[in-house]
Amino acid sequence: MSRVRVIGIDPGSGSWDVLGLEGDDVFLDVSVPTKHVLAEPRKLLQILDSNGPLDSVLAPSGHGIPLKPIADMTDDDIAKANLRRSADPTVMGIGRVLRMLKDAGIKGYAIPGVKQLETVKRSFKYNRIDMGTADKVCAAAAAIVDQTGHLGVPLASTGFVLVEVGFGFNAYVAVEGGKIVDGIGGSLGGMGFGTAGRLDGELAYLLDHVSKKVIYGGGLSAIVGHEELSPKEIFLMAKKDGRTADAVSGFYHDMLQGIFSLVPSFSDPSCIKEIVVSGRASGDIAGQLSGMLKPPFSFPVRTVRSVARISKVAAQGAAFIANGLAGGKYKELVETMALERSNHDLLDDIYVGAVSLDR
Image (cartoon, rainbow, N blue to C red; front, side):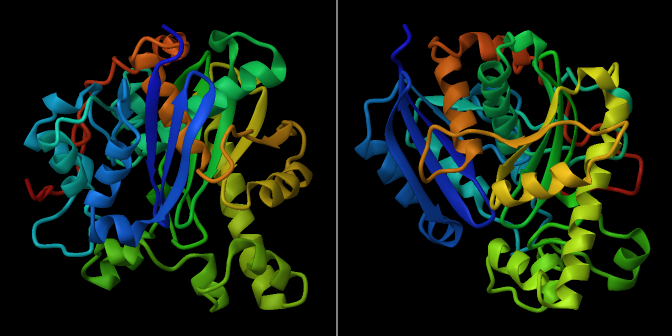
């Protein structure tokens, strides 16, 4: 059963990307602005219905849900995937989308985030929630498949650090032996295009009230004072404007810190075959990083190749996982990544204060 018909969804900060695969053939490749999906979630349902029948859909799973059919999602699963503090209106409405998919009887699966994976050591998880959202797991899946083709190695021999560059956040995922072994989520991953990342605790204290709106701001575009510009435009500005050049230098400094901080997560640095970059402006970033990595960490750097023309790599990885869960050609990928071993709770091992969650 290799030509299953599936759809993968990537719920990004700037756009929701949807990729449909039948076998290896792309039958759907679209990108919808996030604000449009959240304003009218049924747009997503219309896309799914108009491209059926489908063997499986990989649901947008936010911070993560233990691997299970969409029909089996609980209210607690959805609350934790959404991570909405009571009465906070700034949280993305992914919970509404998940409930809509469940109520509509969509056939498919919800998947875990990095913290929930048992392939990540518990000792790495203390006082962490955002070690990489479910879409980062999908991006890693796409990168695993890509490395097997690029280097000619089996799934179980893949190893890399993934740099996932989004509209808002930058995140980093460590893969060894075809399994995710650690991750740094966007809110911990340093400066992104839209977000400050790694919010200083003393600054958080002085802010008095840290909402999602705060977490989603303060990034490279805010620092240079041009939040309307694309990443490519900011990089071009940096060649002529000293203040922008300083900000871009800080952006890459944080990126290097993200990469290097994952090196101890591998059993041996030699397991890291390359640094792979996905997301917005990944080509520009890969070229810059390649010149910044020095011995003993001078790993090859390249971008993750995509089968899509429009949707991002995470949507491709989501489609691969959906295919594997439906018994298609990527079944071995799902098994190698051990995604079913995902019972670690997002709110386990938190030792700082009390967590207030809107359920």
